[in-house]
Structures are given as structure tokens and as C-alpha cells.
Amino acid sequence: MPHFVIDCSKSILDLQDSKTILQTVHATAVKTDLFDEADIKVRLNPFDKDYLVGGEENDFIHVFANIMEGRTTDQKANLSKQIVMQLKLLFPAIPFIAINIRDFEKATYSNKDMV
Figure 1 (cartoon, rainbow, N blue to C red):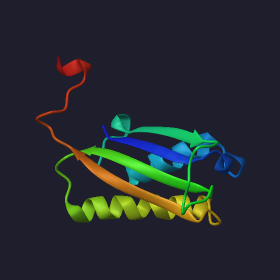
Figure 2 (cartoon, one colour):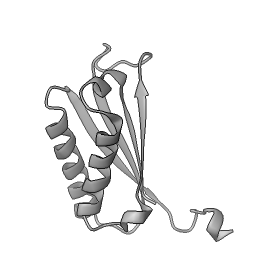
Figure 3 (cartoon, rainbow, N blue to C red):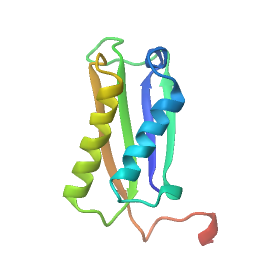
């Protein structure tokens, strides 16, 4: 925990390699001091077809951040802004870059070490 899942148009990989994108999101999350570095997971899902942005096949990046509950709204807003800012630096010509953050409930979260 946390998980950062990046959906994007496949053509952005012509502008930056996937490792750079993954490392950028990871490093940005680390810099917020909200998470232990070893706990951060980042994945990339490029779409080469079957997507629309504004009714057209426009390039996009959307990060889905799933984090454990307990952070303030200000902390989550800062995390969102920092990640979008870094992605905007990598991809100044991409028209749609966004993130949303969802909280996991501690009471309902489980992993293999917990069972």
C-alpha cells in the first residue's frame, strides 16, 4: 500500500519510456513523506485502442491512487497536485493528465501477511 495505477494512451510511450513514468510517480509519492518507500506500488496500463477522451482518441494519462485511510484532505490534495505537476513536466503536450485518490478502509483491507 499505496497502489498507483496509471492508465494512459499507448502513444505516450513514444515520448517517454514506461520505466521513467513509473519512477516519476514513485519518486513523487516518496517525496510527499506520506508513505514508506518500500510500500509504494506503481503499475502502468497503456491502451492502444478502445478509449475515448472528449469523444475522440486523444492522448491521456489518468492515475488511480489507492491509499490507506488516515491522510488529511490537504495531504491527499498535495499528493494529487505533485503527481500531476511531475507528469505535466514529462508530457507538456498531453491534453489530459489527471489523478484521483481513493481511501482503503483499514478494517476491510487484507493481504497475505495478515491471514
